[in-house]
Length: 590
Image (cartoon, rainbow, N blue to C red; front, top):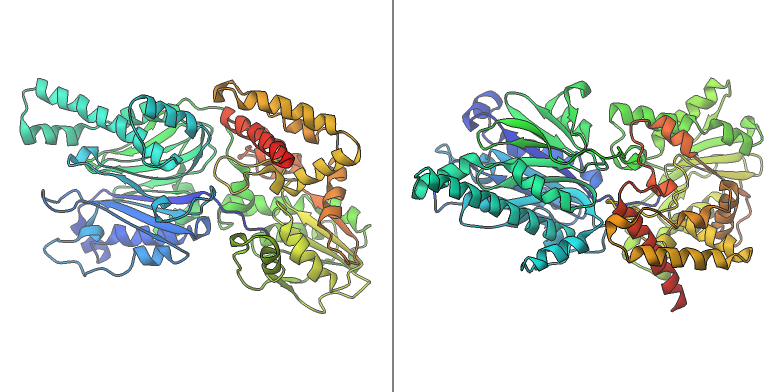
C-alpha cells in the first residue's frame, strides 16, 4: 500500500537485418524505434520519475550525428522522449528512427537525487566512434566511495559523485584502454589513418572492458550500454540480484527487466525467452554477432524475492502463480485470527498489487471448504504523491489516498480480513487505512501481509534505506526500551561502528540482527499494532505476516531475502546496514 520506488527498468534492441528488411516486412524502417517505445511503456511500473533512450546509427558519414540521446523528467517522460519527429525520408536520412542499436530506461529516484542530469542514459563523448560510451542500468552500488577513491587516485576527477556517473567514468576509462590496445595492434600491422579507425571499430572486445570494470563493484545491477562504433551489451551482477531477460532470433536481439514485456511486444511464449545468468553478459558485436560471456564468477545466488512479491508485473506466468501461493499459504493463520468464524468474515485486499495474493487466499479458503465472502472494501481513490511533503502535510495527504465501500460488511458482526503485499513504514496504515476501515465498525480487523516483516533496508535498488523508517525496527526498539535492554543497543552500536570503518570486503556480519533476536514475530506484531493504531480507533487489530519459510516455498527460485532476514548477499550490503544503525543511534543523540 505504501508505494515503494524501484531503481529502474531497462530495454534494449539490436536490429540484426538491414532497415529495408523491416520496411518490407513490417511497413516501417522505424521498427526498432517503435518496439523500444512499447517495451518502455510496458515497464512504466518500474519508474515514473524520468525516462531516456539512446540509439546508434551505424551508417552515417563523418560530420553527421550517429549517437543519439533523449531524456525527460516526470510521469509523461516516455511520451515526451518519443514525441513525433520528422517523417522518415525515403533516401534514408532517418536519425533516431533509423538506428540499429537502441536502449531505453525508466527511472525512480531512490537516493533522493532528482533532476534531468540524474536521468539515464549517461553519455561519454569522443571524436573516435569507439570511445563514445552510453550507459543505463537497473542498479545500486554499495561501494561507490571506494570506486570514487580508485578513480581519483588515478588522477581522474569525476564531475558528479554518484554511482551512475562514476560507473560511466570507470568503464569509459577501460574502453579507452581497449581502443589504445587496438590502435597499437593496427600500427603493428602497418595500417594508417582511417584504416586504423576501421580496424578499431571492427575489433573492439567489450568482454575485455567489462572484465576489467565490473570486479570493482559491489551491488545489484543490470548494466546496459552502447558504444559509438556499434557494440551493445548488458551484464548482470554475479549474485543475480537484479533481473534481465533476453530473446534472440535472426531479426533482433532484445533485452528487458521483465519477461512479459518481451512476450507481449514480440508475440512470444515464455519459454522462448532466456534469463541472463549471474555474472554473465550478452554482447552484440558491431557485425551483429551475438555472444554470451561470463564476466564474473557466479556468487551465491540471491535473486531478489521482492521482484516476485511486488515490483515485477504480475502478468508473468511464474510470478502470477507465486503470488497466488503467497496468499494461499496464509489461510491457516488467518483462520486462527478470526477464530474459525468464516461465516462472519469479509475478505478483501489493498489495491492493486495485492489482488493476485488475495485470489490465492480465497482459493485456499475454498479448498478448505469455506464459503468465503469477498468484497472490494478498499479503493485507491486518487494517486497522491505523499512522499513529496513532510510532517502534517504528508499525513493529511496520506489520509485521503484510500476510500472504502460503505455497507460492505455488517457493523459489529463481521470480521474484516485485508491482505496487502507488504507493510513497510506503516504511515498509510496509521494515517489512512485503519481510520477509514474503522468507519465500517468491523468486529475485528485482521491486516495480512503476503510478505514477511520488512526489518532491514535495501541497498540494491529499492527505496527503503533508513532503519528508522521501518515499522518493524521501530517496534523492536520500543520493546527494548520498555524492557530496559538499552545495553543491547549500546553493544550493537559499538560492533556496527567498528565494522562500518572497515573495508567493504572485510565486513562479514550484519550486527543489526541482534536487535531483533530477543523478540518473537508475535511480540513485534503486537507492538506494531500499538504504534500504528490511531487515537480513537474502536475495532481491535491483529497483524498476520507471511513466514520466511512460506516465502521460500512460494518463490523457490528467488532466494534473496535480506529485507526480511538481514542476510545480505554482498559485503557492501552488510557494511551499509551496520552504518545505518550507527547513523540511527548518533542521530538520536543529537
